[in-house]
Picture 1 (cartoon, rainbow, N blue to C red):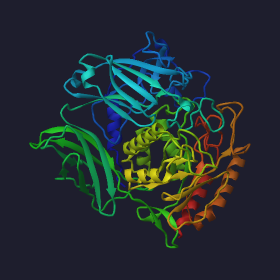
Picture 2 (picture 1 turned 60 degrees about the horizontal axis):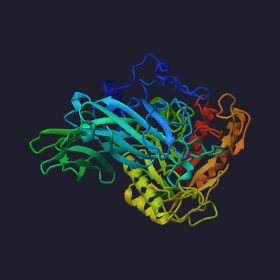
Picture 3 (picture 1 turned 45 degrees about the vertical axis):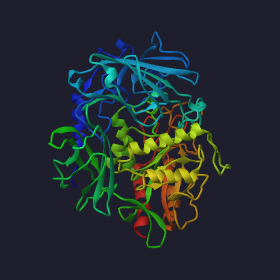
Picture 4 (picture 1 turned 180 degrees about the horizontal axis):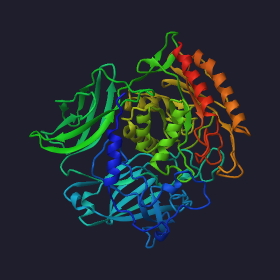
Length: 612
């Protein structure tokens, strides 16, 4: 298999040459920053420095060579919600770590009566002065207002979707000051918030407020530039459909594709901006967990006289996910025309040192590598959305992803089958954020299923939301609700069974999946978030006993797979705060079960489907 290394090499190179404006103090203490002591750490905690914090190119599917990383030390202040810009700052915070995290250097609760203010300045490089300046925020939780040199330039509501602000006019040509104000009511609002609560306990975790993903500046051509790409592989027709959304395109503009390596022939392939372009992919090498083959290409915007303009490097994969019947007439999840049992963990994506934010990109990748090592082929990303690079690592490593919408608003509960009645404002915000999330991460081949609701929490208008999701992305599967209040919609019937396993009756139109089961707990002294209050669905005292208990679940799961169970999700990847039911401890220092025994057991699950 050809190894696609181009984008990784580019990312490493860009990380080296990217212009930065970090503080240049000799050590962290001299500039007033250090991780808050007394917190549980990971092996990567010590790698985090103000001069080196998530320095990798943050958007691997649209790579430009020029960019400025604005992660690092910012001024911050926590002030009453109604107060204006602070005259004095409380101190320094390490962006992109949230205020409540140890790695931010702050570790303070903001609360719904307050808001967070941020400020930092940077010099606009001379090479940027004749270009349009785009300020990118990976994610800010939740309600953000942005000022540049004292001028308000943007408002954004959404804690999980990336957003971009054109700051060209406000930035000027010298020092540029960015000020950000963020309000996050956590449980006091209707907004999507996932597992965040004001009083962490059990399965509920610490609030995450403010900036929690990379902030960066990017220069693009002033007249016309590529805003985004939409990439849709069509395995049956042997083409990939690419639409370049171009701002400022003229009548003579065109999109030209090229590739310097690999077996994809792109000579002469071009089309119009903002129009779907069909790119033939002959004898396509199909992407799968066993062979995660990616095609690297360059997308260039040129004028009619072949004058070069904006260009980006991207990648795509040829793969097809569908619901289909096997030889016994049972609905299964098919990948590239073959039934594949999907199995993997519920993945919360939390870190003891960074909370929502992994300490480093290496740490972000580690969890996926470990899951792959255990012989699993799928991750259910649970009520959280990750940075773009997490999905990039899944693309590269060959990991299937079920992507949840973060929970929000009220919890309908098991007995409220119809769901909740949202206010118009709440419903509108759900629609807006879910739409943005699907569009932002649409191009990642790893994502094979969208999950708009989890266990009735915030669930409303289920048939309509299912239809909306399918319209936004007709090429992926839709799991209307994972667990509890099924409405007969979507591609799968998803039940939860703890510790389980369990299986619903087979259906004619949908596949049957087990969206959550397991939750076997093992508290490990020295690796706990709390000394007390630790919780699991069933508790064990030794690694050997935990392994035996887990293997017993897999033995019970096997016949269910043979009977038609199409997928299963084990709770969970790691311990999280008071939850101790992870495959690993919260600090990722220990894999709690015997790796070789798990590998062998998981292999037996896939064999049940291959025999059908």
